[in-house]
Length: 449
Ligand SMILES: Cc1cc2nc3c(=O)[nH]c(=O)nc-3n(C[C@H](O)[C@H](O)[C@H](O)COP(=O)(O)O)c2cc1C
Image (cartoon, rainbow, N blue to C red; front, side):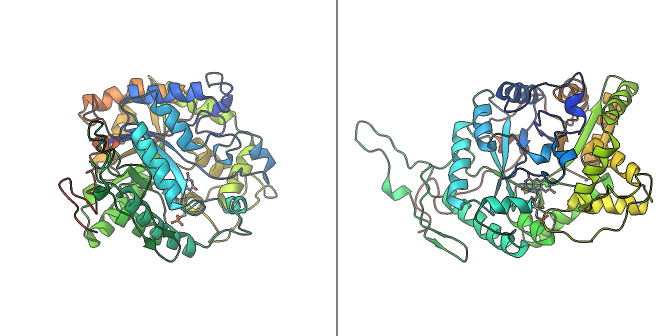
């Protein structure tokens, strides 16, 4: 069964989306709209919603972009786990995946926060583990520069082991709560972690009991070899970043073969690449929406956005001239950057042509057309082992998501590619992921000390 997630970005996943007459107005810190979007995704039987996140306001050095509601600038966003907790009380089945970084946080905090969300949502929590992509965030956490990739991954590798160890602190039946006998918990059914490593010293146990899913679902999205190896060892899902079906097929085969080399069953990780969907009743209407949104992007804004992606100020170059040379490597996340550069070089694109290609999907591949055409494309990717599902960006909210739910989902259901009803209550159930065993306790006794 295909998995479907969506990014509930209220301003839309297109630079012009928030300005369109059909878009939500007043989206800043708007909980009511976020609830409406979550309910919409649940009506569409989506596996879940997924919140990207950072720990700082970006793009202040690019005023044209900063002033124009660029989603990853994030000048006004809820803490994602706090928002997910609110959404949990307005939904019953929808998975709630939230990003949190191992670079600036502590394992105990993350283990506790996501375990709490898993309890509050009755088994619908997911954590997108990132090492952080914005170098500037480091300045909010007592650093004077970005932590090196080497250290970020060293920390992340130990971090996830500590978090999983903490999630295994308690046997499932530890909290006896026998009012008659006066026994609240069974002290034999809890275990200290006593972790001592290079980056962390954590005694444990966690002050949250074993959660409904055992462990919340862990997503990752790192694109470096080290990031992919960590995902192959530890992730339940990978948020993929390919520019085409073919690149996703290569990434899919790559991550699954890494898992096999590590002795892991490749079906225990779901590969979910991002796509941006423009769908309407007719392909003509979908084209019109695409054109209308692109009309809302001035060349100055398009160039500012592309400058950010390629990490070079392009304003001094003619917009109808070629994309100039840019350094090959940069600090921080760079997957969109590298495929944009490859595409521009391969196809000899001008600056204007490049930003026009990139803006509509914010770097994700665009799938556009009537419901059958969009379903054809999704089926083609899924059947062609380019993915196990999709992370859907919606260029204009809530219209684009509503169109996916009302037009594309029924078509996928008709084709037997997507659920008509949720089978089980948890996010693991939706994604077909096994519930992890407790490393320290079986349900019948203490397995290890
Ligand atoms: C599709 C995708 C989504 C990502 N989302 C986030 C995010 O929301 N917040 C963040 O800090 N990093 C995000 N990242 C960054 C990565 O998870 C990772 O930490 C970063 O790319 C550095 O690792 P790498 O060098 O292995 O790619 C994302 C990356 C990709 C490819």
